[in-house]
Length: 222
Image (cartoon, rainbow, N blue to C red):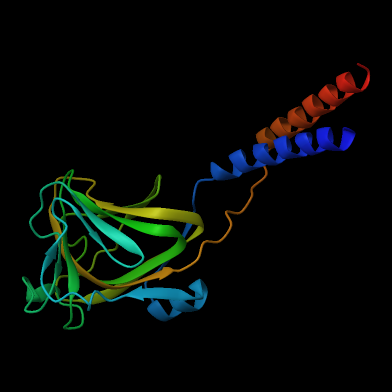
């Protein structure tokens, strides 16, 4: 019985640690060089969108891919997987299928992964060169995507110090930002969220241990 009670206290302690670690706010390392990103991220999965044979809209709904889905936010016509000939050739990436997207005010789109990932990158054309496009990662605001002049292609990505499943592309202002994106790169497996100790957490844990000790002591002398 003593062993069972001790295990209960340990389980309570572990639960307290898990709650604290899950509240960890993500930090990000950004990359504008794809080679450096690949080297730092390790094993990656790729989505090129080349399996699509007709234009496919996620304007008012969701398009499901192998590892993630695209869901439009608001009524934006050009939230589509665009098959050549492209609607706007000026945002071409590599002459193949791409994602044509627009953010403006309260409109944008979500990328929702089927399993947690820690890194994401893609090749973009014409981001934040008129209006701004802001990226949110889970509950954390990553910031505005770098400005890429229309007609130019550049890589942009990041590695987080924890797991996430949702990316939200939206606008921090009323400016309209239309752009192309292709060749999504992302981690295919989740990694543990790192544990960070804080004084407040230490007090919580000590309180949990003290409470467990009191419970065991009372049980012992009953």
